[in-house]
Length: 559
Ligand SMILES: Nc1ncnc2c1ncn2[C@@H]1O[C@H](COP(=O)(O)OP(=O)(O)OP(=O)(O)O)[C@@H](O)[C@H]1O
Image (cartoon, rainbow, N blue to C red):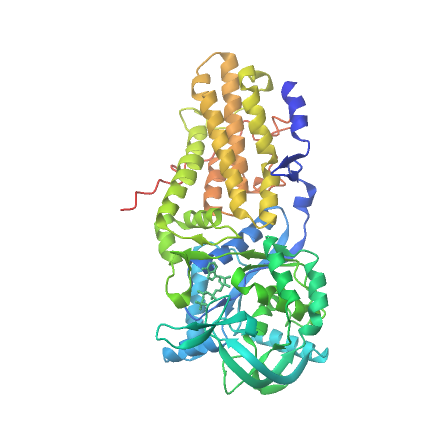
């Protein structure tokens, strides 16, 4: 009775960090929206590093989390293969651009596969379907009167493939003592450009882009303010082609092959390519969620919605923006050669170890420095000791000789355990909603932090109730000992379910060890803590799966 009454109270809406949550799994979480999740296509001027892997990993979590909620999502990534930087990199190697791109694109694909990225489409911007999509998109913009021929005079940054106003550049003295101009944002050198090319009427779209921004598509919200500020500054029309004499490696303007299409217009359309834009019966695309680094915010938050609105297509539903991984405080970057190799990291920490570290330590609104000591400390503490330790303790042969989910006995709860049990259950019942809130707001780090905190609480509960002693006691003690085991196994089942998007391999190992069938691994079909809630719980009495040994062996000290 006590527990039933208190659980009713526990199911009331509660507030955490002043964010209102309703407990348990709400219908809103399980709406079967169908939408597309994307990463930017990655520029193939050199092999992938940890920063790229982080971007694609964040998108992978969004995709896998949508599936966990029973939603239909597609997830596209790929490689951006046109432009001056690729042309130059291929020339240096004496290769032709396409051969060069094929090799580097394959490197990206291999890293993503090894990392377990569950993309449903991989777009190469050199593919025919993409070339067709870009050509069709250009023709639509032209038909709707958004393209005209004009003279572009201004600064251009080859490294960022970006046009910059005077105010976005500054003067600097290079190490040889020469005065050069650089981009304020990226620090890369800019050059003066004056040439006739095709222009896009970006300035006329400012009101529509501002209206779209009112729907607050940017997460975290901090980036909304940044974009709003940009839109208040001058917004000149955008040069969207280069003369073929200067850049040959690109998609030709359909009506004028002496020009190639601006690489960012080309690259952004990959999202439409993945949605089938070049197919004859393209159905206007549904809600789109783009994951991107803050360095390419302007292209995604101003140019991309403007292009879409001009073409009569819906602008993105959400832009999930992350910050950068740094090495010694400097952005990890191909051109600076200060990169960390993701394959080496996976050899050292395992695939899920690396996934967990990046997702748990990377924060969307601030840069994060990579160092091996931090990886060791985190993985040993949270995966090996805390999560792995808890699984071992509640599933161990010695304490659970029948190797099953014992029955829960409501009447067995001793009064000395009321408060701890009530607090633990309260936080466990609300955990799916807490995780949902953080994943939706693009704070996967905080979702993992919340799970880790509950794992620690469960360990503390297990330690203080000492079921290994209870199961050897009298009938009442045995009933409570079994209830403690049931609660801990259920908590573990909840963690295994919620961890699937972030660390699919470890989560699978947990759920396999608990004997959870594949159909009960979604949020909808989890039915967590039913026995405590007075509902039918078919996990009671069910056998555990085979022993898996250590979930995550402790890492040796770094020498
Ligand atoms: N250090 C990083 N941390 C997080 N994400 C990154 C990092 N570097 C790149 N990315 C992500 O990958 C995308 C593509 O990056 P890009 O190819 O420009 O990498 P880069 O190493 O900075 O290259 P370059 O040195 O040639 O400018 C970025 O827009 C961003 O989303």
